[in-house]
Image 1: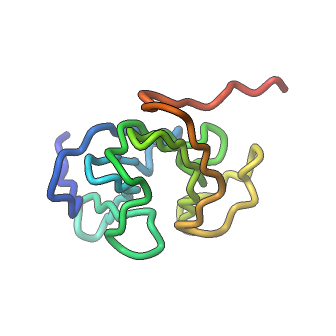
Image 2 (image 1 turned 30 degrees about the vertical axis):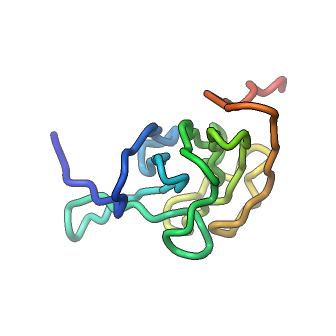
Length: 133
């Protein structure tokens, strides 16, 4: 059933992904911002907020073209960009994130950059490696 979703983005949204439980989604945009959205049952719509510590400030210097949640805990989001960086940023939500599996299971912050890897070219896509355990 279709539902309303709100993202305060003035440019194009380039990629989107759901977490493994289906209670959060992430969106990457052409401004370099990465958004994480959750459902507000009382209002019957989804709302997305940027993962940047300062609201509406992009975490990438160019378009963020890929986004994906950590498959075990959904407490961090991986984003790739045309600025040549891949970033892991925290997106913990105390009401939703009860899973504590994997290497990011202990994260309890929102908007903290954990890792930024710079490459010598565009990053078209990044994904998580499957667990060897």
